[in-house]
Length: 98
Image (cartoon, rainbow, N blue to C red; front, side, top):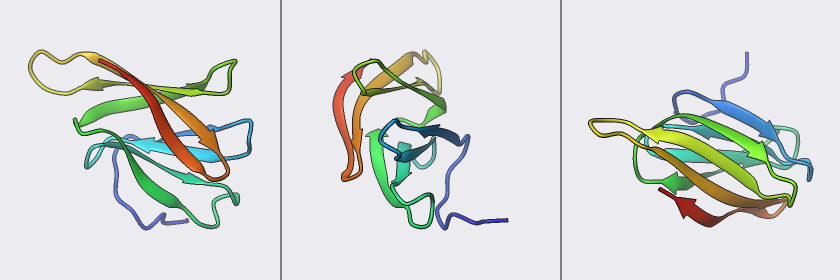
């Protein structure tokens, strides 16, 4: 079994059309790690949102952006989302929707 060498809860994987693999998780904040070499090495974390988001999920949109959706934990929680630009050089936040 492989250990990734970083901590997180509720992992969610997505392979982007560029070949980059994304791994979103919720601890210590809503973040993701990414790899462009078939998981031999990992980059990140990229902090998507400072809240402790729960159960992230991702989809690649027709324009190649990735939409990550999760919910904010705690009283009055809400569904939140972030659009990401992904390529072999990295992951960049394009827009947040709260």
